[in-house]
Length: 436
Image (cartoon, rainbow, N blue to C red; front, side):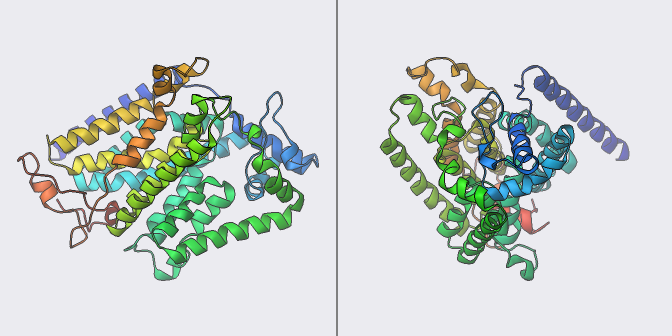
């Protein structure tokens, strides 16, 4: 047995090394280089503001139209950049992204590995390699973006403080919503998770999140009143600071509408699409939370945030990672060789490959008004819409575990359990829910 275990470990090490080499080669030869463009914007803004005495939102990166676009609270958190050498700022940015990404992946992948009987470190290492090749993650690292830090704050809040059945002591759970509030104060788009808490009737957490965001915003305003006034009255509303809405990197519903008619994009059409999307999302989230499936509610909200935001650059699509992982989780819970398993694995594979491929960039400088251009230039939006429509919602068994029938019927032609059991049971209840 020890020899067999050693051989198995050796094979797993070989697979991980081979996969890491392939991914490293892909990143070296195929990945776009951005030279930490966004980090340079933050870094330059902090130096201009804190060291040169300029106005925070007046700074523009040289030879570009891009300036600091985050709320003053984000600037307050980034202010240490004014004291750091440039290369150390890069190290801090990459380290934060790697650490927060690893933690979120561990929370999502480890429960699957334990349920399926996989070697946990092996499953985690494979997931890390696959996510490293994922274009939105590559863009997040290469731009020096803060996406994974925000995703981490929200995930930690919803998985460990908000979720029913969490093992976190009650005295700490009263802080549920703080992570969502902090993420919203850093960048406005995570505010969709406050709406999620309201839609799913977690009133206390929603109030805490709103209060946290408000307090952080007011503290920043007290420290830098001029910057706060300029942001809320001018910079926030100046869309030229973030780029053109019809640019192919804007993979949101607004981007679709803008690319249909770049000169006169229809605001009414966009608002109708947003309202329909939010209605469907709210219904699905309430269904997920009623079933105890907090992680699917979290994943659906990350997806809808990308869809309804006026601007969703490709690097923002790291918010799709939880939904893609849950597709695989649902597929593995279905009977082997079943149609459901094949469909979910197929969707996950196609969605992942599309989001690795840089497909939309074919239309960067081409006309996207024809049918092929319309479909191809919005390819990442179609993946997001598919996830919002078809990501399964799981239902807990009476004992709070995965239904045993979902495992025992594998390969026997029986129907899979509809709407598999809740991932939250795996995240917060340890070995309970890991039985096969």
